[in-house]
Length: 124
Image (cartoon, rainbow, N blue to C red; front, top):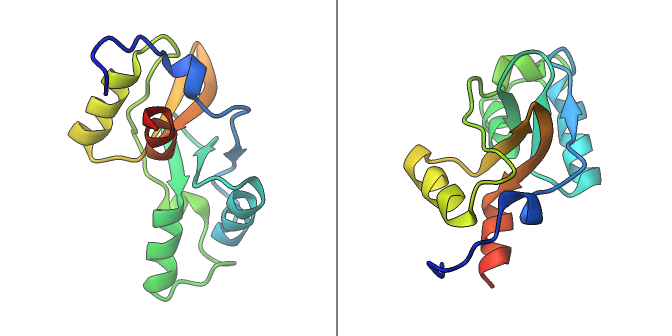
Protein backbone atom coordinates (compact mmCIF):
# COMPACT_ATOMS: atom_id res chain seq x y z
CA UNK A 1 0.00 0.00 0.00
CA UNK A 2 1.31 3.46 -0.87
CA UNK A 3 2.55 5.05 2.35
CA UNK A 4 1.28 8.40 1.09
CA UNK A 5 -2.22 7.03 0.51
CA UNK A 6 -4.55 9.01 2.77
CA UNK A 7 -7.71 7.06 1.91
CA UNK A 8 -10.01 6.72 4.89
CA UNK A 9 -12.33 3.89 5.87
CA UNK A 10 -15.37 6.08 5.17
CA UNK A 11 -14.40 6.18 1.48
CA UNK A 12 -14.17 2.41 1.10
CA UNK A 13 -16.49 0.79 3.68
CA UNK A 14 -19.64 -1.08 2.72
CA UNK A 15 -22.91 0.61 3.57
CA UNK A 16 -25.65 0.32 4.52
CA UNK A 17 -24.70 -1.96 7.36
CA UNK A 18 -26.46 -5.31 7.28
CA UNK A 19 -27.52 -6.74 10.65
CA UNK A 20 -29.19 -9.85 12.04
CA UNK A 21 -30.59 -10.84 15.42
CA UNK A 22 -28.83 -13.45 17.52
CA UNK A 23 -31.98 -15.56 17.73
CA UNK A 24 -32.22 -16.01 13.96
CA UNK A 25 -31.23 -19.40 12.51
CA UNK A 26 -27.92 -19.52 10.66
CA UNK A 27 -29.83 -20.45 7.51
CA UNK A 28 -31.36 -16.94 7.57
CA UNK A 29 -27.90 -15.41 8.01
CA UNK A 30 -26.64 -17.40 5.02
CA UNK A 31 -29.65 -16.29 2.95
CA UNK A 32 -29.07 -12.61 3.77
CA UNK A 33 -25.38 -12.86 2.97
CA UNK A 34 -26.12 -14.55 -0.35
CA UNK A 35 -28.79 -12.01 -1.32
CA UNK A 36 -26.63 -9.07 -0.27
CA UNK A 37 -23.44 -10.51 -1.81
CA UNK A 38 -21.67 -9.98 1.52
CA UNK A 39 -19.74 -12.25 3.83
CA UNK A 40 -20.54 -10.90 7.32
CA UNK A 41 -23.40 -9.43 9.32
CA UNK A 42 -23.32 -7.41 12.54
CA UNK A 43 -25.30 -9.23 15.21
CA UNK A 44 -27.69 -7.03 17.18
CA UNK A 45 -27.68 -9.47 20.12
CA UNK A 46 -24.71 -7.86 21.81
CA UNK A 47 -21.97 -5.35 21.58
CA UNK A 48 -19.25 -6.07 19.05
CA UNK A 49 -20.61 -9.31 17.58
CA UNK A 50 -20.56 -10.48 13.98
CA UNK A 51 -21.39 -13.65 12.12
CA UNK A 52 -19.37 -14.53 9.03
CA UNK A 53 -19.54 -17.03 6.21
CA UNK A 54 -16.69 -18.87 7.93
CA UNK A 55 -18.74 -19.19 11.13
CA UNK A 56 -21.64 -20.70 9.18
CA UNK A 57 -19.44 -23.00 7.10
CA UNK A 58 -17.81 -24.26 10.29
CA UNK A 59 -21.22 -25.04 11.79
CA UNK A 60 -22.38 -26.86 8.66
CA UNK A 61 -19.12 -28.82 8.45
CA UNK A 62 -19.65 -29.88 12.07
CA UNK A 63 -23.06 -31.29 11.09
CA UNK A 64 -25.15 -28.65 12.85
CA UNK A 65 -28.73 -28.12 11.67
CA UNK A 66 -29.07 -24.76 9.86
CA UNK A 67 -32.60 -24.19 11.19
CA UNK A 68 -31.89 -25.22 14.79
CA UNK A 69 -28.50 -23.55 15.17
CA UNK A 70 -28.88 -19.89 16.03
CA UNK A 71 -26.62 -17.03 15.02
CA UNK A 72 -25.67 -16.45 18.69
CA UNK A 73 -24.39 -20.06 18.82
CA UNK A 74 -21.74 -19.44 16.14
CA UNK A 75 -21.14 -15.65 16.12
CA UNK A 76 -17.82 -14.08 16.93
CA UNK A 77 -17.97 -11.88 20.01
CA UNK A 78 -15.91 -8.88 21.09
CA UNK A 79 -14.66 -8.08 17.60
CA UNK A 80 -12.35 -5.19 16.97
CA UNK A 81 -13.91 -2.13 15.36
CA UNK A 82 -12.59 0.84 13.42
CA UNK A 83 -13.71 4.43 12.98
CA UNK A 84 -14.63 6.00 9.63
CA UNK A 85 -11.60 8.34 9.73
CA UNK A 86 -9.00 5.57 10.10
CA UNK A 87 -6.51 5.25 7.23
CA UNK A 88 -6.67 2.16 5.03
CA UNK A 89 -3.06 1.23 5.83
CA UNK A 90 -4.04 1.06 9.50
CA UNK A 91 -7.01 -1.16 8.66
CA UNK A 92 -4.77 -3.54 6.71
CA UNK A 93 -2.36 -3.69 9.65
CA UNK A 94 -5.21 -4.41 12.10
CA UNK A 95 -6.61 -7.19 9.93
CA UNK A 96 -3.17 -8.77 9.75
CA UNK A 97 -2.47 -8.35 13.46
CA UNK A 98 -5.82 -9.77 14.61
CA UNK A 99 -6.15 -12.35 11.81
CA UNK A 100 -9.60 -11.12 10.76
CA UNK A 101 -11.28 -10.35 7.44
CA UNK A 102 -14.04 -8.01 8.68
CA UNK A 103 -14.09 -4.97 10.91
CA UNK A 104 -17.32 -3.17 11.80
CA UNK A 105 -17.10 0.60 11.40
CA UNK A 106 -18.33 2.55 14.42
CA UNK A 107 -19.02 6.27 14.79
CA UNK A 108 -21.22 6.56 17.92
CA UNK A 109 -23.11 3.61 16.40
CA UNK A 110 -22.40 0.97 13.76
CA UNK A 111 -22.25 2.67 10.35
CA UNK A 112 -20.65 0.14 8.01
CA UNK A 113 -18.30 -2.77 7.50
CA UNK A 114 -14.82 -2.91 6.03
CA UNK A 115 -13.59 -6.25 4.71
CA UNK A 116 -10.38 -7.67 3.37
CA UNK A 117 -12.13 -7.66 -0.02
CA UNK A 118 -12.63 -3.88 0.31
CA UNK A 119 -8.95 -3.45 1.18
CA UNK A 120 -7.87 -5.58 -1.78
CA UNK A 121 -10.19 -3.72 -4.17
CA UNK A 122 -8.81 -0.42 -2.92
CA UNK A 123 -5.27 -1.57 -3.67
CA UNK A 124 -6.05 -2.54 -7.27
